[in-house]
Image 1 (tube, helix red, strand yellow):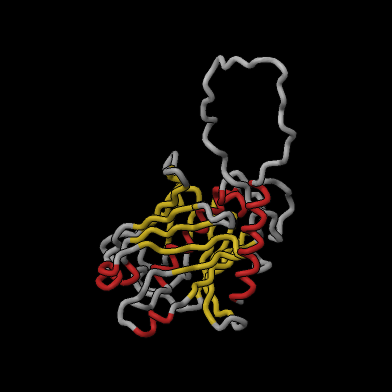
Image 2 (spheres, one colour):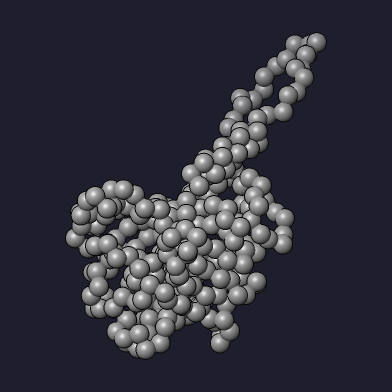
Length: 275
């Protein structure tokens, strides 16, 4: 698996270098004297490096202008956590690392947590953190930010903000204070209006308690199921994965990115066992 990932990375890097190489042109030769009438000025800000051609499943052909645009038309995405030897040798967990994959197994994003060792030791899974998602061009596509959630205490609702470079809020996920089943609302970053409602398994006890490892969440709007998130055991890789299934093909890239952020919030709230 590591060898395959290294081959993919090498392929992506070579494609980027080829895309950035200027085409050869013939030198211009002037017969007469040239007068410089204006000093050269820098051009506008360099555009985002386009994503390399990938084998992800999709029905449209386009060049994404933002990193999260590669989520368009995907029927599902799968989040896999990468484990480090340091986690099993020390009492303090390290910063988490994840890989977001397409249905064909291609790595769409590499996600890395940014947090302090003190917060990881004291607050465990409720710690404040920033999750940085890099696309195949090694550019930052999304940033997930969560403030201190007071661990497993029920007195403070949990929430997570989804940001896009250079510093714009795409939306946020806010927990609803219910006691019969986990419930969240996905809000738009511009209007603060709820876009989707996320409901966990019914009759699961107090919403501040941990859920079983095998768990299912449904995401709906206006009574229609738009997407779903589940946490299942993947026998082929001997680990649990968080899976997102986009039931509505009309979901925009922005809405899919917000749902992806929701999956990461659920991962930390219910499925992180290390303190």
